[in-house]
Amino acid sequence: MNTDAPAFCKAPKWHGLRGFVLERDWRQCQDCEAEANQVDRVIPHHAGGADAVSNLVAWRRACNRTAGENIFASFEAKRTWILAHRDPASVPVFPPRPRRGIRKDRLGRS
Ligand SMILES: [Zn+2]
Figure 1: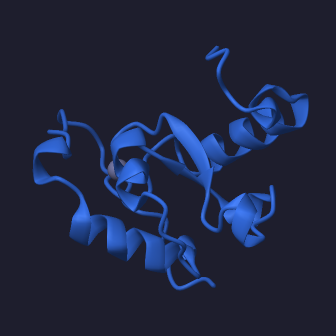
Figure 2: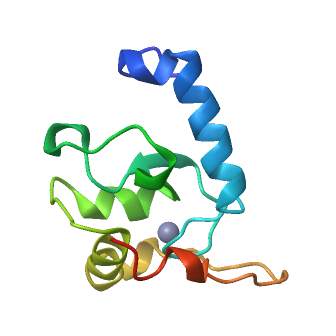
Figure 3: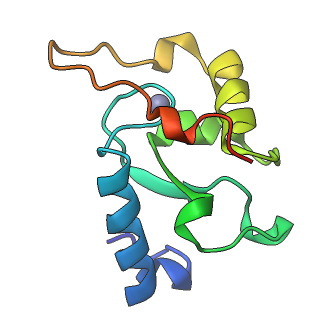
């Protein structure tokens, strides 16, 4: 584990939430379908976002980092922005495998 991680990342509650969200989102980045390697908030802590499953999404680090310090009102707004702004060179080439797609129930939520 990254010992420089913020304290909340070490809390048992966070590990439970993180595991739940990774499973819910099929361990796929909800932007590009590559393997997700982090869980982050749609609305960040400092903007009032809660540590609740409704505010947490599985991302690939490179996609989530594209969002930077921008604040988005919804998952769909953040996803749209990331897809428009990410570095095309960072988009992974997928090996052949069943494609399950983006979870449709995550689109359009606010
Ligand atoms: Zn992605």
